Image (tube, rainbow, N blue to C red; front, side, top):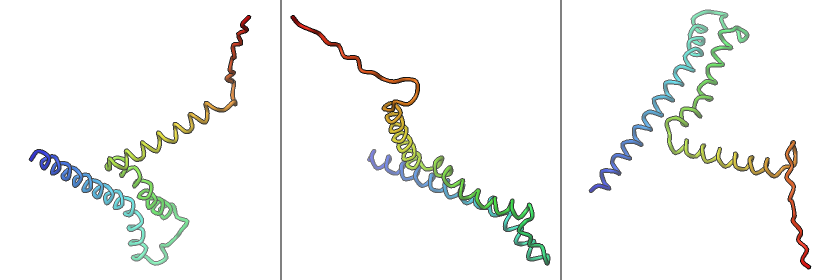
Length: 121
């Protein structure tokens, strides 16, 4: 009975994580697509408005990339399994880098092995 309650809670938590992820992703998409949609709407209403060199057009197109860039951060903050995966990868790479740097002889510190020789008579 207790296991069933715990399983229900975890499913409910996963459902809310999914809803939150979907909602934030949709909100960021709407924000990023709005300037370009507005530009295209105004272009359809006025003749000769299309100017790919205009500042507003460049800004509107740049906002489209906001959605692409933000997806990584949205998933990082809303999906715990993705966050754990990224943390594991970062730890793996930092451990490889630290072992690589400690084994190199570049820089001011060099490691010498001192050998003690004892002579027995």
